Picture 1 (cartoon, rainbow, N blue to C red):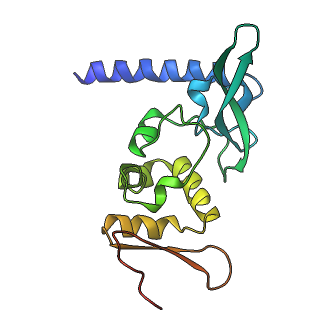
Picture 2 (cartoon, rainbow, N blue to C red):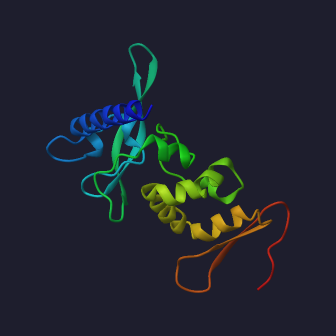
Length: 183
Protein backbone atom coordinates (compact mmCIF):
# COMPACT_ATOMS: atom_id res chain seq x y z
CA UNK A 1 0.00 0.00 0.00
CA UNK A 2 2.82 2.43 0.86
CA UNK A 3 4.47 1.63 -2.48
CA UNK A 4 1.21 2.40 -4.33
CA UNK A 5 0.92 5.72 -2.49
CA UNK A 6 4.49 6.67 -3.46
CA UNK A 7 3.86 5.76 -7.10
CA UNK A 8 0.61 7.74 -7.16
CA UNK A 9 2.37 10.73 -5.59
CA UNK A 10 5.21 10.52 -8.12
CA UNK A 11 2.72 10.44 -10.99
CA UNK A 12 0.88 13.42 -9.50
CA UNK A 13 4.13 15.41 -9.22
CA UNK A 14 5.10 14.55 -12.79
CA UNK A 15 1.70 15.64 -14.14
CA UNK A 16 1.71 18.81 -12.03
CA UNK A 17 5.22 19.70 -13.24
CA UNK A 18 4.24 19.06 -16.85
CA UNK A 19 1.12 21.19 -16.43
CA UNK A 20 3.17 23.97 -14.80
CA UNK A 21 5.62 23.97 -17.71
CA UNK A 22 2.75 24.24 -20.18
CA UNK A 23 1.14 27.11 -18.25
CA UNK A 24 4.27 29.02 -17.33
CA UNK A 25 6.27 28.50 -20.49
CA UNK A 26 9.49 30.49 -20.73
CA UNK A 27 8.10 33.85 -19.64
CA UNK A 28 6.41 32.74 -16.43
CA UNK A 29 2.73 32.95 -15.55
CA UNK A 30 0.71 35.49 -17.52
CA UNK A 31 -2.95 35.74 -16.56
CA UNK A 32 -4.07 36.36 -20.14
CA UNK A 33 -2.39 33.11 -21.27
CA UNK A 34 -3.82 30.89 -18.53
CA UNK A 35 -6.61 28.47 -19.41
CA UNK A 36 -9.85 29.70 -17.83
CA UNK A 37 -9.96 26.53 -15.71
CA UNK A 38 -6.76 27.63 -13.93
CA UNK A 39 -7.34 31.36 -13.79
CA UNK A 40 -9.22 32.27 -10.62
CA UNK A 41 -7.04 32.71 -7.52
CA UNK A 42 -3.80 32.47 -9.53
CA UNK A 43 -0.98 35.02 -9.37
CA UNK A 44 1.10 36.08 -12.37
CA UNK A 45 4.87 36.37 -12.52
CA UNK A 46 4.55 40.12 -11.94
CA UNK A 47 2.48 39.53 -8.77
CA UNK A 48 -0.83 40.61 -10.33
CA UNK A 49 -3.78 38.51 -9.25
CA UNK A 50 -5.61 36.77 -12.06
CA UNK A 51 -9.37 37.15 -12.28
CA UNK A 52 -11.87 35.31 -14.42
CA UNK A 53 -14.15 37.63 -16.40
CA UNK A 54 -17.18 37.05 -18.61
CA UNK A 55 -17.29 38.45 -22.11
CA UNK A 56 -20.66 38.64 -23.80
CA UNK A 57 -20.88 38.48 -27.58
CA UNK A 58 -23.88 39.12 -29.78
CA UNK A 59 -24.06 37.97 -33.37
CA UNK A 60 -26.53 40.22 -35.18
CA UNK A 61 -26.97 37.93 -38.18
CA UNK A 62 -28.13 34.99 -36.03
CA UNK A 63 -29.64 37.04 -33.17
CA UNK A 64 -27.80 34.87 -30.70
CA UNK A 65 -25.60 35.82 -27.80
CA UNK A 66 -22.88 33.81 -26.18
CA UNK A 67 -20.79 33.98 -23.05
CA UNK A 68 -17.05 33.51 -23.18
CA UNK A 69 -14.70 33.44 -20.21
CA UNK A 70 -11.35 35.22 -20.22
CA UNK A 71 -8.51 35.31 -17.74
CA UNK A 72 -7.35 38.85 -17.00
CA UNK A 73 -4.79 40.53 -14.77
CA UNK A 74 -6.49 42.46 -12.00
CA UNK A 75 -5.29 45.64 -10.36
CA UNK A 76 -4.87 43.72 -7.12
CA UNK A 77 -1.28 42.74 -6.41
CA UNK A 78 -0.33 39.74 -4.28
CA UNK A 79 2.12 40.31 -1.47
CA UNK A 80 5.24 38.15 -1.67
CA UNK A 81 3.65 35.67 -4.10
CA UNK A 82 4.36 35.22 -7.75
CA UNK A 83 3.75 32.48 -10.28
CA UNK A 84 1.07 30.82 -8.16
CA UNK A 85 -1.62 28.48 -9.45
CA UNK A 86 -3.96 27.78 -6.53
CA UNK A 87 -4.49 24.13 -5.63
CA UNK A 88 -7.87 22.41 -5.80
CA UNK A 89 -7.35 21.36 -2.17
CA UNK A 90 -7.09 24.99 -1.01
CA UNK A 91 -10.07 26.07 -3.11
CA UNK A 92 -12.17 23.33 -1.55
CA UNK A 93 -10.84 23.94 1.99
CA UNK A 94 -11.60 27.67 1.75
CA UNK A 95 -15.04 27.28 0.15
CA UNK A 96 -14.18 28.68 -3.28
CA UNK A 97 -14.95 27.59 -6.84
CA UNK A 98 -12.34 27.46 -9.61
CA UNK A 99 -14.69 29.11 -12.12
CA UNK A 100 -15.48 32.10 -9.88
CA UNK A 101 -16.02 35.31 -11.84
CA UNK A 102 -14.57 38.46 -10.27
CA UNK A 103 -13.70 38.92 -6.59
CA UNK A 104 -16.13 39.80 -3.83
CA UNK A 105 -16.44 40.21 -0.07
CA UNK A 106 -20.25 40.02 -0.15
CA UNK A 107 -20.50 36.79 1.89
CA UNK A 108 -18.17 37.97 4.65
CA UNK A 109 -20.79 39.94 6.57
CA UNK A 110 -23.00 36.95 7.33
CA UNK A 111 -22.77 33.53 8.88
CA UNK A 112 -22.29 31.42 5.78
CA UNK A 113 -20.70 28.18 4.68
CA UNK A 114 -18.13 30.27 2.78
CA UNK A 115 -17.14 32.25 5.88
CA UNK A 116 -16.92 29.04 7.91
CA UNK A 117 -14.56 27.48 5.40
CA UNK A 118 -12.51 30.67 4.88
CA UNK A 119 -12.08 30.99 8.66
CA UNK A 120 -11.36 27.28 9.17
CA UNK A 121 -7.97 26.29 10.57
CA UNK A 122 -7.30 24.23 7.43
CA UNK A 123 -7.77 27.24 5.14
CA UNK A 124 -6.07 29.75 7.45
CA UNK A 125 -3.01 27.56 8.07
CA UNK A 126 -2.56 25.91 4.67
CA UNK A 127 -3.66 28.39 2.01
CA UNK A 128 -1.66 31.63 2.34
CA UNK A 129 -2.58 32.92 -1.12
CA UNK A 130 -6.32 32.80 -0.46
CA UNK A 131 -6.00 34.13 3.10
CA UNK A 132 -3.86 37.04 1.87
CA UNK A 133 -6.34 37.80 -0.92
CA UNK A 134 -9.36 37.90 1.39
CA UNK A 135 -7.45 39.72 4.13
CA UNK A 136 -6.76 42.52 1.64
CA UNK A 137 -10.21 42.45 0.03
CA UNK A 138 -11.84 42.64 3.47
CA UNK A 139 -9.50 45.45 4.55
CA UNK A 140 -10.63 47.42 1.51
CA UNK A 141 -14.17 47.19 2.92
CA UNK A 142 -13.03 48.21 6.41
CA UNK A 143 -13.24 44.65 7.74
CA UNK A 144 -10.44 43.07 9.75
CA UNK A 145 -10.55 39.39 8.74
CA UNK A 146 -8.97 37.91 11.92
CA UNK A 147 -11.65 39.62 14.07
CA UNK A 148 -14.37 38.44 11.70
CA UNK A 149 -13.09 34.86 11.89
CA UNK A 150 -12.88 34.98 15.68
CA UNK A 151 -16.46 36.26 15.90
CA UNK A 152 -17.54 33.60 13.43
CA UNK A 153 -15.79 30.79 15.31
CA UNK A 154 -17.35 31.82 18.62
CA UNK A 155 -20.73 32.29 16.89
CA UNK A 156 -20.94 35.77 18.38
CA UNK A 157 -24.40 37.31 17.88
CA UNK A 158 -22.66 40.58 17.12
CA UNK A 159 -19.82 40.86 14.62
CA UNK A 160 -17.53 43.83 14.85
CA UNK A 161 -15.19 44.69 12.04
CA UNK A 162 -12.27 46.91 12.87
CA UNK A 163 -11.43 49.39 10.18
CA UNK A 164 -7.92 49.40 8.81
CA UNK A 165 -8.17 53.08 8.00
CA UNK A 166 -6.53 55.52 10.41
CA UNK A 167 -8.79 57.03 13.02
CA UNK A 168 -11.55 55.73 15.25
CA UNK A 169 -13.81 54.52 12.43
CA UNK A 170 -15.29 51.10 13.12
CA UNK A 171 -17.83 49.30 10.97
CA UNK A 172 -20.31 47.25 12.94
CA UNK A 173 -22.80 44.77 11.53
CA UNK A 174 -25.58 43.38 13.63
CA UNK A 175 -26.80 39.85 12.97
CA UNK A 176 -29.90 38.24 14.34
CA UNK A 177 -31.61 41.50 15.27
CA UNK A 178 -29.18 42.33 18.08
CA UNK A 179 -28.09 45.96 18.16
CA UNK A 180 -24.39 46.75 18.57
CA UNK A 181 -23.27 47.71 22.05
CA UNK A 182 -22.36 51.38 22.56
CA UNK A 183 -18.73 52.24 23.21
